[in-house]
Amino acid sequence: MAAANKPETVDVVVLGMGPGGESVAGELASAGLSVVGVEARLVGGECPYYGCIPSKMMIRAGNVVAEALRIPGIAGTVEVTPDFSTVAGRIRKEATDNWDDAVAAKRFTDTGGRLVRGTGRLTGPREVTVSMPDGGQLTFRARLAVVLNPGSNPAVPAVPGLEGTPFWTNREAVQAQTAPKSLIVWGGGPIAVELAQAFTRFGTKVTMVLRGSHLISKEEPESAELLAEVFRNEGIKILRNKDVTAVSHSRGRFRVHVENSEDGKTVGAASAGAAGPAASAATGAPRLSAERFLVATGRTPALADIGLSKAGIKVKKKGAPTVDEHLQLADGLYLIGDAVGAGAFTHMSMHQGNIVAGHILARHAGTPERGVTDNHAVPRVTFTDPEIGVVGMTEKQARDAGLSVRTGFTALGDSTRGWVHKSGNQGFIKVVEDSDSGVLVGATSMGPMGGEVLSMLALAVHARIPVAMLQSMIYAYPTFHRAIPEALRALK
Image (tube, rainbow, N blue to C red; front, side, top):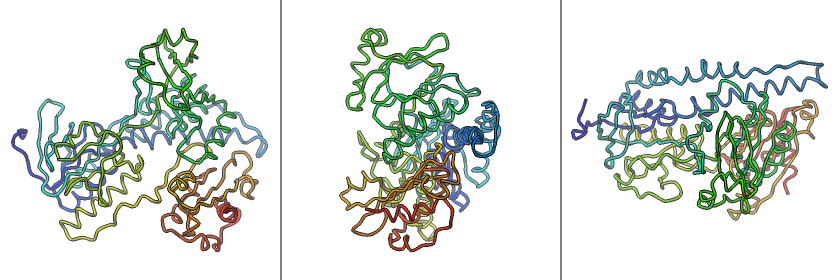
């Protein structure tokens, strides 16, 4: 083992082997560079083990149950008996190998890269020191580049009584082997709504506690209103403008105290801490009870412990560090993934990784660059039923940016495909146009396979295709995407 005071020189160090980091490290190693990948947890990151893949398996299973229950009135009668153990087994066997990353690790080392297990931090501009599980340390100096891909962790607010209880984040939720009889979900963002609906469809009684007044508050209000209507019809209870002020757990049940937020803002932690569970109950604050408690209040970039200051990078109290168009914090020091602040999505991390790998190879191997960061057309999908696909700006974001805005809207139920589809046809297309330039700057596709229908709108926003050209296209009939020209005709 190399001593910490005797650094080993390599070409590239990738700190954090999530999707983007694994992609960069594997490509650079395949190109013949000496690459060290550092990972303290699982190679592959959050997505394949606790995020995208297992959660979408749960969602897919729940959607199959819901679709079967739509048979009456369309195709006869049916009797459905949901069994969560089926999807739980599939997550263990097919998606996560029971949370074992041996396959992913081998995929990287087969490229010629070296995998180091441990917690890495910057100890210089291009120097990374890794604390090993056995207590030892390794230090690497990168001749060409260090790529930081620290990822993010579930944000867990400091609430009296919460610490030490067996509460869930997304990580524990996807490891569940049975669907709980009851579940309190704290939060209203994508993770919260996806898991709330998935468990509901396996018989869980779900109550959602929102700090604000809307589900998925960063998206179009029409999406929030329709999703809330669908949730009410499925039996999900939504408590708005509430905040959790105390939590306790005993005899297999959570007791969660909630109070009104102030205009949708969080009640001060100091006052909540002073009150505590007993005082909260004494003041008459509502108390919820459930078998499980899911904290889905957002994610926090894992930047605090990677030593940015050691590389001369000023750390902001709020917001992401500043990167250049090639995602450099400084010469040869790159940052990709959730911590960049351009969207905590696997596809963003891999897109950024592609830019970084291209930039490193262009500088040191003479290959062509692959472009620079351009985040005007970032696509995102919330995998509820109906599915919510969004690209670019919402109407509010466009107006806040000072654009001259026109919007167009059409409900899927009004289209031929929606009428034919019948049960489960809720959704809409909404387009946001910069009327000065005549191009779309944002769009939402909500409905069956809304994320798939989004692809054409994502291309339109990305390529800045004139609305006039989109209106002149031929759209196949009868399809859900045929609602797009209807929304374009409705621009006003």
